[in-house]
Image 1 (cartoon, rainbow, N blue to C red):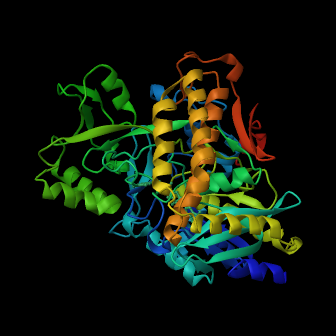
Image 2: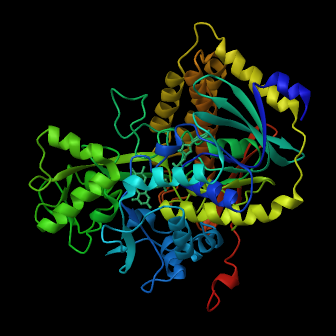
Image 3: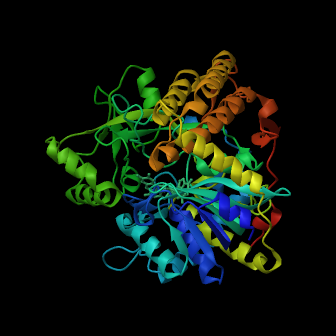
Length: 567
Ligand SMILES: Cc1cc2nc3c(=O)[nH]c(=O)nc-3n(C[C@H](O)[C@H](O)[C@H](O)COP(=O)(O)OP(=O)(O)OC[C@H]3O[C@@H](n4cnc5c(N)ncnc54)[C@H](O)[C@@H]3O)c2cc1C
């Protein structure tokens, strides 16, 4: 290892596999790689035991292949047209091969994770299957997801991985077009670390913070988000800067959440668990038999909001199940409603539609092949960060598939020299922010990005608005980026968040500008119809020579081997 690096960084480490992001997918990737004999370092921006989308809990694993539904049918459901208008016409927007690969061995992967101490069974030790009105079959397992994250964190620690908690992956290091490591920042003591790795996998979840949180004023610049609040899209931004392709970054999504806890929507129980549940509008008229995200947009357009999740009519046993579900997904919600005298057995839950709170999981993300390798050598991506990724099992599956593939290649990979100039660039940049006098709060900068996105890039987009968004973002970066104050390690982390968010906001606006089309969950007011020129087309975004490149392309056709009998 070069002596100079030791002088630049507080610490220099070396490993086979570097995992950036210790959420569900990162934990599974790390554990599996370590069990297969690799040396693994995990960087976690928060704390492994309770971090990421699964930090507080969750209540179901959807789309589990079983005798009622094959993995091929599951993939068909995911990549075909949806039942509801907002997700119609998504054909061609996914790499179906990634989906097939992800879902094929789900049952085997569940068994494997169970051998590590993960428990997906119910109180009687059996799987608790519930029917899904959307797929028609018993494809969903309810489980006590409040324990999942600590169980996986324990598996990581037991497998011998080195875990660096409170340590943020700042950027990737490249050599001759290959990713060869990363630089990291300890968010408590400010230490700057260089890690040399034979393979790097990014697993930092979704991009959401370029939009306002579900709960806005007076918390505009805070983090009351449904998805993982540390999610500044770090994986996407790092991969983008390293030249890896992102896809469909113009697609953003919106959901309905319970107004009492903007973060929650009980996944399995809003689908009824065998009993009809329904959504009613302000007049009490039933608008849907199943709770569906984005329905509120339609109800609102007709002036019939508020909208309610109507459950008092359901049976005692269903009410009880809902309470357990809430406890499994987010215990705090129950406490909060109790304190304000709300009785979910008597009262209707008011639903709140949130607009564009995140770049759409599954649709927007890092492009990978079936082994979760990105378009840049040495770099992999798993979990929600991946185009065609997401959910508990999708994330866990991708972690295992990645590890199995990469560990086989390790004997052929040699460590590369680290380019000191790249390390120094970040070291100097962070030092500059540490010492900015009378600088700007990173949160103010971030709020400004959110404000631009909300005003010019939410929902009904048009050329004029998107160009204005780009112009304002440009001004913001030029005038304020260098003045962001990172005088504590925590604020320095927020400064790096701002670099990432600014890059991703730009990618989002430019991708939206390029797509002269309306389909799936993407609207252009000035191109209100589906444009045949965009049939089966995808927007790819990557960075080249410091500039954002947007290219229209397509994903590969489905490999016929996935469709063969017995595949
Ligand atoms: C409230 C809620 C309920 C949900 N319920 C369900 C459910 O019931 N069923 C289901 O299938 N799915 C559910 N999901 C979705 C599921 O949680 C996600 O699909 C899954 O957690 C994604 O895993 P991931 O590893 O990709 O990302 P995450 O779990 O979000 O993990 C990302 C990790 O990366 C870390 N990180 C971020 N940036 C950096 C960086 N720069 N350096 C180092 N670390 C970094 C974060 O701190 C975090 O730990 C739910 C999500 C939420 C938020």
